Amino acid sequence: MHGRAWTHAEGPVALFNQAVGWLRRNRVLLPGVSALVRQVAEVRTVAERRLHATVANAARRADRSLPADLVALLQVPEGKRISELERLRRPPTRTTGTSMAKALERVDEISAFHLGRVKLDKVPPNRLATLARSGWARRRRSWNEPGSRGAPRC
Image (cartoon, rainbow, N blue to C red; front, side, top):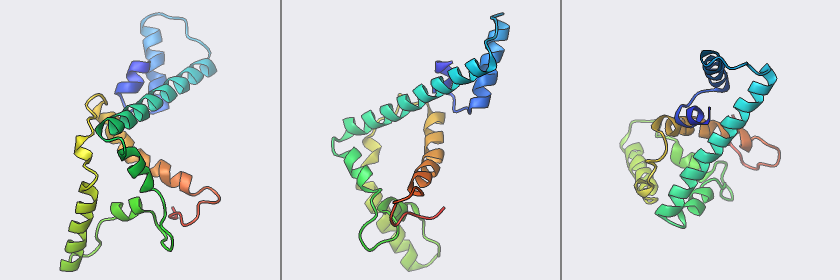
């Protein structure tokens, strides 16, 4: 089950159904539903931790200061309403020459991190795509916690 959780970006229901199917095909006595649900949750948690550790280690190997630089992007500067990451994430909304110049400046700021040197070949591509899609939603949810001054509203 861990191998499937690591290589596939499936939700808990799909992983549960896969486990039930495997147990039936191999004629293994099915455990109670709650026991299997707990095991699926544990396996998913281990796979998520492995994914985050692998990405963090790859960033650290590329440049010792890169993880700290990326975490600093989450800070909301004094007098601003959004974090630097949110500012860099937002594309231009108008198609004018000024907007194009700002977009190119944004590209320069992002490319200054040299993220191409982070080697993520050990992470399955679909897991990386899921992390990119879901990571932002998770980060926004944590910003909505009490005491998160200047956090973006969701």
